[in-house]
Image 1 (cartoon, rainbow, N blue to C red):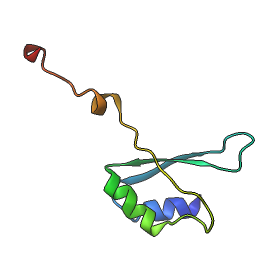
Image 2 (image 1 turned 90 degrees about the horizontal axis):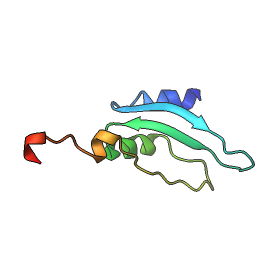
Image 3 (image 1 turned 90 degrees about the vertical axis):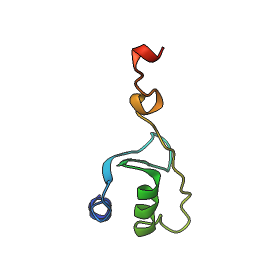
Length: 75
């Protein structure tokens, strides 16, 4: 955990939130908050996965990012 916190502090706009370990699986899920995907990739270049690990990520949007607020007069 210390390594994650140290590496995320090196990139502005990237914050380590939590880590989850699915029951019965040999894997984990990191929860990160990043201002954009480029910042995540910048962090990933600093903190690469261990040898042999399969690495992938998904981008999740907040409700307001997915459904931008509209002006009711535009409807």
